[in-house]
Length: 219
Image 1 (spheres, one colour):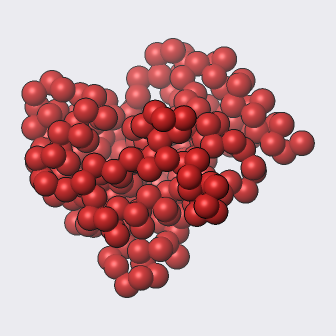
Image 2 (cartoon, rainbow, N blue to C red):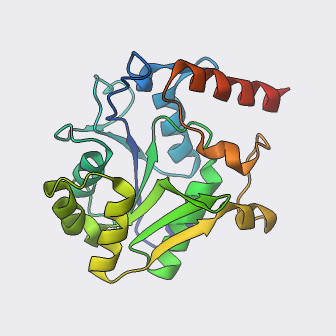
């Protein structure tokens, strides 16, 4: 059970963004294997670990065997975000990227709870002083503003999130994960440093680096 559901709040929606072109990987990242599991399975498990039913947004290949798939127009992550928000009436939706397999479920749970408590338009995390675009909690009222950004060709998710939060008059929240770890509000069962949580897998070298992180953590 996630924190919002336990507090009597309507259950939020969870989505895996899987619409990248994977050009630097040479094959669809969603199906790339990391430590014996595909990235799409790992991404869905992050959301499931936070007590969420999860769907897949913007898939480039057939991922229907793994969960419900929401089609978009192929315009990148922001297109997937908009399509996902259109598909749900949840007040808050959280998005994780298929190529970030080390995000702990506890961070997802915290961001959702934080967004609800603060009335956020968008809630993100930061590490080492740098805001991370995903995971991202987005309020449903941000959809028209995000669609406007997409229609105008401004496809960058971070800038679109900032613009949407301002337009709907809700806070744009960025929470430092270092504080969350030090205060015991977020933890990683593998004891990986927080900076590792946001490693992206875009190339075979990235995959090898993340595999090395996991191997050291298991050892």
